[in-house]
Image (cartoon, rainbow, N blue to C red; front, side, top):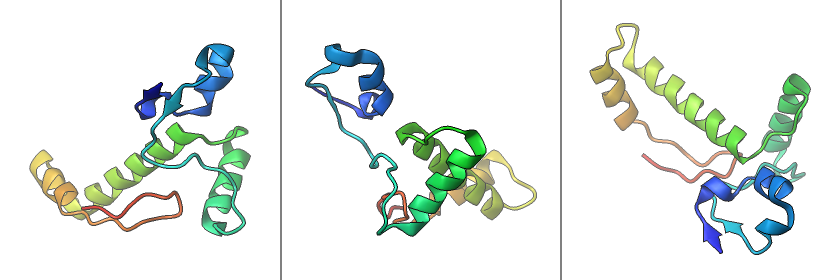
Length: 106
């Protein structure tokens, strides 16, 4: 059975056990595993584990990217941020692929 990204996290299978056999979630991003070819990701995972004493997961990365995008748009909107200036800044963002595996988008 295929599901949305909502069932992609490793916790679904860890908690669901045998009942989740054959369940496949389609993610927007890959799960964050250390990769010697991706030093930035491996360093980020290490820093996350050190700070929170837990392994990051798919939802951690989605939250991190969302917060990063919010901050970038808020900074572009300027010190007199309004909902209109924030929306315009957000709509004007152009993001490049990063160490998490996100695609470029605008």
